[in-house]
Image (cartoon, rainbow, N blue to C red; front, side, top):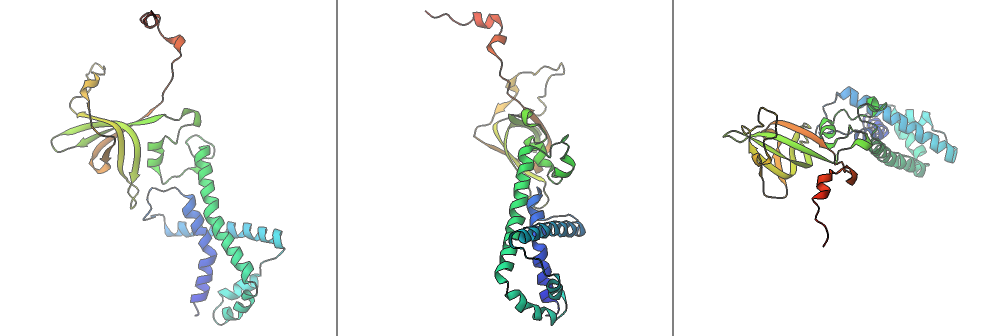
Amino acid sequence: MNLALPTVVVFILLLPGFIFRSRLKRVERTSLDFSPFGAVVAEAVFFAAVLHAAALLLLFWVTGALPDLALLLTLLAPSPAPLNAIPAIGQHAGLVTGYFGLLLVASWLVPTLTRWLITVGRLDRLGHPLSPIARFHQAPWYYLLTGADFAADELPDYIRVTAVVDVGKGAVLYRGTLEEWFTNPDDGQLDRIVLSAASRRPFELDKPLDGSDGGAERFYPIDGDYFVLRYEHMLSLNVQYMRIIEQPDDDLPDDEEADTPAAQ
């Protein structure tokens, strides 16, 4: 009993900070977090302190009640002092339950909304003034495969991916439109990508040295709606951000207009 109750009290006090931290960060590894233990605890303690300060200010503004720090220190003291404080807490069970209930909800909701605002406002893209503090540094694939580093008016309409894959008898070049991608939950490494309108060709059938395209017949369409490529089989990966630009009719050449058949 000398250790159990104070430990539970500390855990309850710091739990909102850990929840806030986990909801605020965008990481591509979900099973393991390799951040230094001291950094994790320091961030959680900081977030917990901020949440408690905000909650106590709200509590004082609504009810006029002030926290009893002496009672809190009694709960953290060795036995039997915590047992003597339990009846005093029981007299305000409703207020204490509401306080921690509101705090836990806020620790989940506030970082979720903050991350959404960062993403929608593109506050984390390179070049933005808030990027140093708003950028999700543990999600490199997110920025590469979503175009999140583009300004709102420069976002790509779609992303074309070209990958070189070793199939045993030689390298094959696959290309297509990126539809979805997944990371490994253990280490955050790219696991697989999903392509639409996929096509392939042997890698040795490269573009001519004169720089011309060489013709689209070099690629062979792959039947099916979606094609899945595993990252572990890729030798290299090329990403192109594509934008569709509409050309006004006034810019069409005169000979194209002349080729249009006249109505009979």
